[in-house]
Length: 73
Image (cartoon, rainbow, N blue to C red; front, side):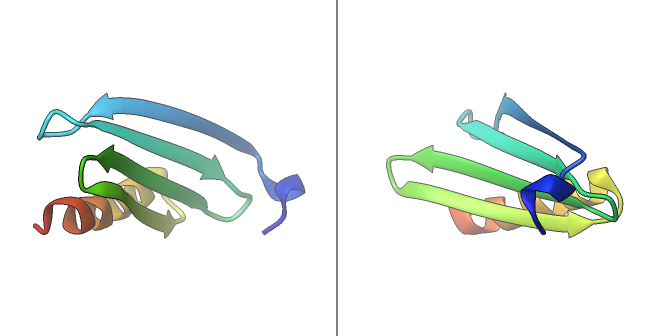
């Protein structure tokens, strides 16, 4: 994907269930959404990503991967 293919993008910040700040970036392409989620804490930086035609599904994939990486759950 190229930058010129991006239809929209936004970044959302919220507190995780462990009271750490999560950054969720949503990028809309013509055929899908790419969502990344990240947490920085004393153990390091953790990332998760999701790709799906539905924004909510992509966000769920990204958060699930993030929580597994960051909290081993």
